[in-house]
Amino acid sequence: MSRGSGTWPVFRELVREEWRLHAELFGGRRFAPFPVVVAVLTALAVGGAAFGGTDAATLVVSVHLLVLGFGAYTGTAGLVGTDMLEHVLGDVTLLLSSARVLPVSRRRLLGLFLLKDELYYAGLFLAPMALGFAPLVAAGGLAASTLPALWLSLTLTFSAGLASSFSGVALLTRGVRGRWLAAAAGLAGVAAWRAGLLPAVVAVAVPIRAGVPAAVSLAVAALVVGAAALAVYDPTYRPPARTADDRFRPLQRRLPDPQGLVAKSVLDVARSTGGLWKPVVSVGILLGVAAGLAALSAVITGLRPAPGVFYGGIVGLSAFTSYNWLTQFDDVESYLAYPVSVAALFRAKRTAFLAVGGPVALAGYAVAVAATGTALLDAAVGAVLAAGLSLYFFGLTVALAGFDPNAFLFDPARFAAFFVGVAVPLVPVLLAGFAVAAGRSSALLGAVAVVGVVAGGVGAWLSEYAARRWTRHYAAG
Picture 1: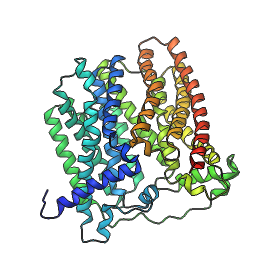
Picture 2: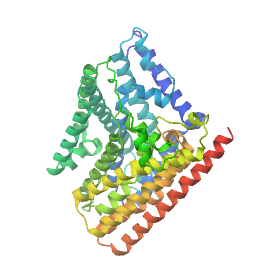
Picture 3: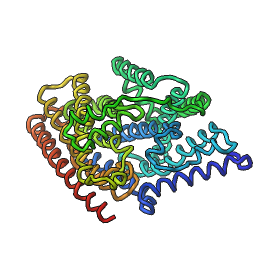
Picture 4: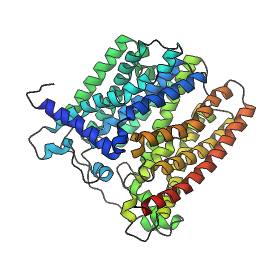
């Protein structure tokens, strides 16, 4: 990276901007120990899963798949020039936008921005995640020398996810429709699954297991795809203007919504980029990752988890993303000038979640179970679990984060509370899925159904608690 050409100062300022942005949005000084929190929580999760009988290979693969998804999300940086950024962050100007007013190439800025993301998150997230495997080293399941290799492997996987999603963004700027890209990706996934190639395809994203030649090939492929995407990317692209019919009154009449708050929340999602397909895509990605984990588990351990219990538990996590879409363009402060109570706002979000996120999660669960095939009892128990955990994760999210579910992901205290809150019901349920598949089904299925019912009750209570808690918070100023 040339210092004399001005590239180095721009890159340095991009890194400083990223840190300041995170610190400002996610807890100020409390953001500083976030890498430590990531390492500790990873260690707890890895140690707990290993204690429950999960082997090291499965844990390594699972973390790589999560990192692949995170890299794909980060690769949407090409969209930060759209109106979405203003809705999320407010009236801000990032260095990436300076090409509009300064004689700086947007492609050059965007390339540095993506490189900054690669290095920044490799240090902030991926290094602590690799260190989180220390319990396996202490238990003799991994060699200490494996940890640096694990970090490099996770970094490569992150790069692959980032490059793949950014290439999609680049094609969007050239007129390729998003639905075509989504259809192509879906068809490719189905074809790989039908051909029995899904484990092999997923294994490519785990360089530490695939070997040095495969890791080098993945690095070269990510570099080539990223460079090609930068060349294809159209820096002048702006999303086309759209018009919409008045759907507010018809929607309000169909919902228990005298103040129109629920209809507004649903329409905020429907009229945003991607519309109501966003929760569908989120659930699809989540279930795709789950399918990859199940397939790899069969290869590594010779045992697939019971589909109903396994997918019922996983699909409940979609509550977080669905709620995120419902609050992405909203904040409580914008309502304080109107005769609307804070509690009414939170209850309206719950109704909107039940109207949008709940049906999508259950539909995704039904598709997953139908595709894999399972016993009727397992499918029914999984449906109860999916509904209960969806409501529980929703209640947990809104109680901890209010209208800002993204913020607590980088606030160490709230992140830790969320992680523990998710792990308490989910980890035992996923382990139970393997036990059910192994034949110990009757009592366990009953226990899993009880977990679903109890989780749903706790979630309903948490959502009411959130309404009271945030009412007090905003009343206090």
